[in-house]
Image (cartoon, rainbow, N blue to C red; front, side, top):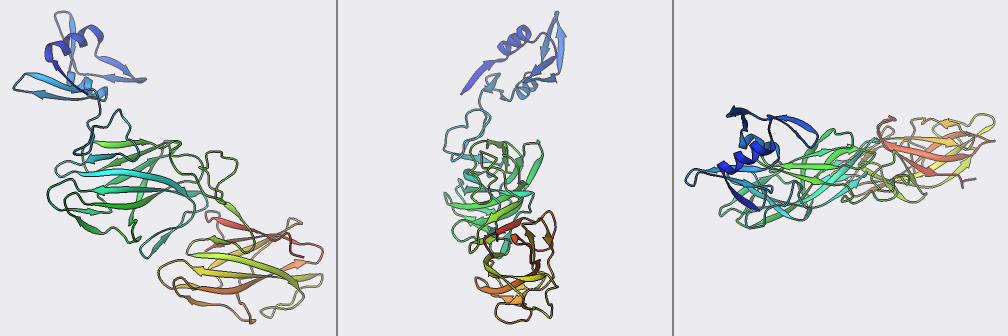
Length: 382
């Protein structure tokens, strides 16, 4: 709602209500430029309105200030945005000069991969992705360019830290990158991007802007689709916390990064592998594994592509011996796996005869704390 308030009335209200140049607004002390005349304190109405989050302009012809008691952010041809917070699913206009319309369609948390074109992105063990699905709409009467930087996104986490977006934007229709696309008048495109955020907890706020001018603020609490199983920490009822060690069942694929990995039935044997015989009082645990390339181009698989290790029921951790074997031959497995294709191999570990494997921990890349681990239950193997 807009209200036209004469200058004299504004000053009168300020004189009566303020009485000083220092204000406390929402718990914060704000100093407003002022002057004293006739025993009264007059403050700058523009500065005061700005401090209150209002919009004020001056109509020279009518000699009146025009004060808006609502935010002046809205989409061309749509209603103004009510209050300080934007609504998910509603369209708004952002940017000066030639504004573009924006609508946040949905948001979700993910601890799995996000693919944009040939690029695959996946969060570390102490991270998750805030994935944003939104619409770019050209409201102008001429073509306008839309690209990854048409809008800028900042997530504010639970510790009030700003998390900037990845600057990677994909098209919903085909997952191709949004490079520089020219939108015709009234044309829309649905796209997505992601922000790397902490693995634990909700993300309270999202800020969206386009160049200079007004910004959109979204309260995301309770509005983000929670993490899917098995990534969600069951102790967080909001579904907003991602596990750093994800439980996976035998025979079920897990998205470790560039690959989906499936651990198949394992077995104990006294046979030797890679010229290594089990020591006295020990035997080999042989674990069969399938690796499926989930990227758009060939990916190399070799001994250092994954870092597996076994934790026994007795509490021992058996480190990786840096041997990835062919699924059917006692020789090293290495080579390129075409996009979308699968390759099978084997890991082996030396386990004492008086102990049993409890779980296999596997992660893509080096054995570091920041990489997400997948824990496969081996307790049924005898």
